[in-house]
Length: 301
Image (cartoon, rainbow, N blue to C red; front, side, top):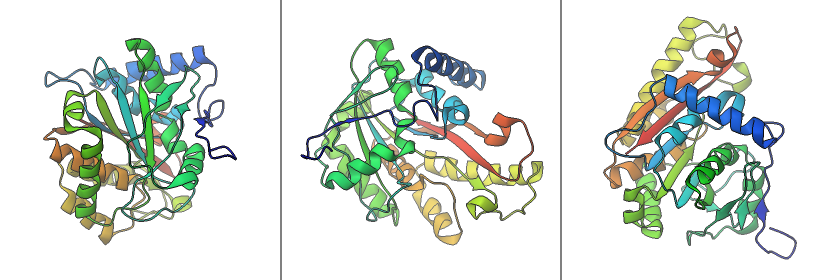
């Protein structure tokens, strides 16, 4: 928001640092991400295009492959996209979606328009936090890429969610989105809902090293097993086990609140989810490290 409270265009805050600001270089990054996603089996499913997704949000050097699945599986025409994201900068009220009030979203590949859901009640605090939030931004160049491909505008709305306390609240928030967005447009894939989430952050820097401080193949395998169990539960809409796991142990899956809402949406819309990809920063860097972050893509049809 500007000083007079007028809605503003969200700047491409991380262009030039977390990903390339030059359009040609960014397009090359996205093209390579699509090829990487296809190499691990991402392709249009006979059941139709996706309607919901959980996507990673690290810098594109790490998250691009996971985001590439969006392009590989997107509907032919996307009208609107709602991005649900964790809040890394401020703590927001539990069980609440805090929407921003932007008039558009800049990317190096062009501007995306904005739309209002009718749930925008939190004013400049949410809008200012969204401007600084990296977790909402990494998917925007991919949406701009799709906008150029379909030659029709894509409108975006963004909301932050800090914490969802249990399955009933995830279902309530999912129901509120269906009410304002319309079940028909969600079912046709004209409106996508995306949860932005990286998975386990492992190492002392993250305060999470349950399998030991020395990172090796055995530790990575144990993290993978736990992450894929959680991802499969989300894909299947098994929110009871998801929230039980969150209560029982220390989780560093940063977007679990947003992912739980999308999982509840999948159940409500009778969409089938699957884990499309999983890898870690160790796979990207190809080196030994004392810490790593995991990235997972989940798609619903």
